[in-house]
Image (cartoon, rainbow, N blue to C red; front, side, top):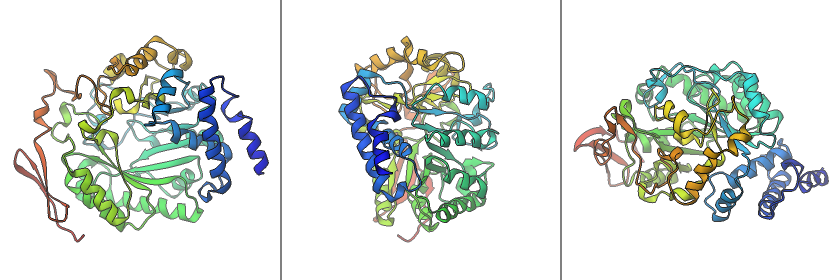
Length: 443
């Protein structure tokens, strides 16, 4: 079995033949060796195919890499995407206060049909990883589970985010037996009261029960993958619960890979009352509590302080384009949640994959003009709303009103946090007035 596996890898059949670029082959061979090692000796890969192990290693080596060699290689060769994101539907049945979907006034609901989905996927014969989450509730797409099955048949790694309000035993088992490698529960509070004020229409008790169901089924099936993660979007409504959140997760007594904290992606008029830039010290306080509890904390790039962000020429997330359910292609998922899909279609996008073959889009002027700008450290027209990297013109803060650009003073320096002598969040203030007084808990 091992010999056959080695032949599969050394013949390069997984990646469509030996690449003519020497640099590309060197990178691929390194990934190949790591994949083989995990496939043969890592117990976490039990039950996974060699191709799946290769796809997993490839994505985690290339995507959002901070390595200068990977960055330079991507800009030089601009390889055809092997990692993409597809939005299954924009249908949603809850009203999350920080989500653009809640505030759409003219956006039409679009569910991607299965034949459309297959038509897109067939344009990526060497696809290795996919994100299957968009601005909507994925399970409202009647073909969603079939879409997951399609990826599993091709050993394509899947990452997805879900509120878990619609999860049940059958769906949990389906996900765990699929080719998914990472599943996030979108949970933005440490308490029932805060959660149900933010995710209006969802039910805290049901979500908690479904989280435990997922963990129980995963243990019954004795599977390491998909790893299970928590995702917390920081707003003024919940910032006081960031530290306490880790205690809540710990008390669930389940297997958790990490807890990820993100800022709201973009401020816009309807959400200025809840948008907040991350204050100094918050990340350190959360990480400290995570270390005390033995919970890994991931601080998302969009929650990084502006001064600590990498310059725009370091960007490599464009190698994983995001595809709307209507076929619109945008550079990456971080341009979502600005409540302006017209801008995304007319300015940020470089084509529609339901109207034009993706290879034509990738080789077209719009895409390559964007890469040329980024490579020179300039802001491309597609990327004027970027919140992941440091733009040469200074940070983007979105359109706050019809009158033009938002006044950053309205929602930046206003927010301040006071800590107690143990480093826990004690009080959140806005304009010097108490917004949240944190309930004490034993460390």
